[in-house]
Amino acid sequence: MVKKLSIIIPVYNEAKTVHLILDKVKEVVLLNNIKKELIIVNDCSTDGTDKSIQNYIKNNPDFDIHYFEHEVNKGKGAAIHTGIKLASGEFTIIQDADLEYDPQEYNDLLAPIVKGVADVVYGSRFMGSNPHRILFFWHSIGNKLLTFFSNMCTNLNLTDMETCYKMIRTDILQGFNLKEKRFGFEPEVTSKLSKIKGIRIYEVGISYYGRSYEDGKKIGWKDGFRALYCIIKY
Image (cartoon, rainbow, N blue to C red; front, top):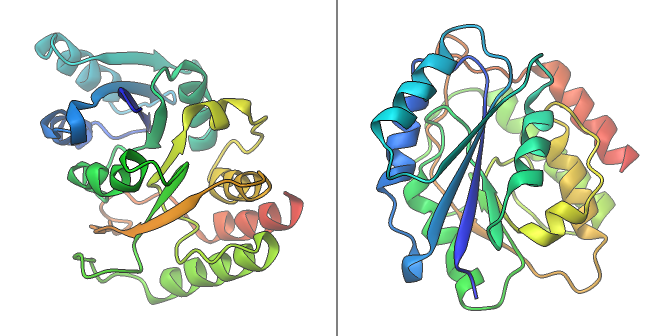
């Protein structure tokens, strides 16, 4: 039975949007009145993100928020590692601090979990009829190639390995010795999940409101090559 969902938000230089995503997370009413635990990890931002978060916490004392800061910039994966160690809910999901993913869709991922049929649920940007912003052709090709190669190595049939939205049993996550400090988290955790005998992995379609680089998107082609390396390594 799921009583609490831990929501990890790794943050780096998102002063302009972090309060907006926090509002969206706060507004969500989860299935079966599941409680929300928010774990924000600020990866040594330099743009006033800390002040924005502190102000938000002060103005929302009723919201269960746990806030932590890295003294040096370590990478998104490292921020997620910190959050995983602190999670106390039965399940955990990663939420980017930008506005690319919609927290209202947590319940779509929770549905197979609440039914008792899933240990892991991926939110796929490439399936279903939900809205998807049209942006970069080569990014979409890169994502699909990485997912294809990952599936070859893991024997899974995912459509979106690189998605941010992965809802995973917390005890499973906390049992991993995760290594990747940046965007290699996605292929590493997927590979390690695939090795668990009898694990039940599901996938549901989600929306995607992607950002351009002018909007603040951070992942680049070098991260794609790192992801390829991580697929082989793990």
